[in-house]
Length: 142
Image (tube, rainbow, N blue to C red):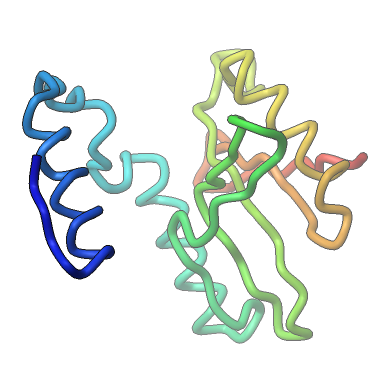
């Protein structure tokens, strides 16, 4: 046992000694490490940059916020977009299906539908590429 006259140092030393006895955790999987934007997100960022240059939006941020929807349930939208009137929108980029719709995982679908209920002060959109250099947007309402 480690003894110290300073209770904080003693507690810190005791915790460090306990941690040293615990087996080391395995490294996080490669998926847990953010790799940056995918191809669709890069294309959409180019569109947002054009809209920013034209003054249609004030700013945008890639994964600019993490929203806590419930205990152990968070949503990190692809883009946080600040409009000229200072309102905030969140845009989630999805892949295009052959029929022209968008493809979304079930858990992501539940989260994006829950987000406007938990955060009614923000607007939420799903965006996906069209066939001819355009982007489709669908607002998710509570």
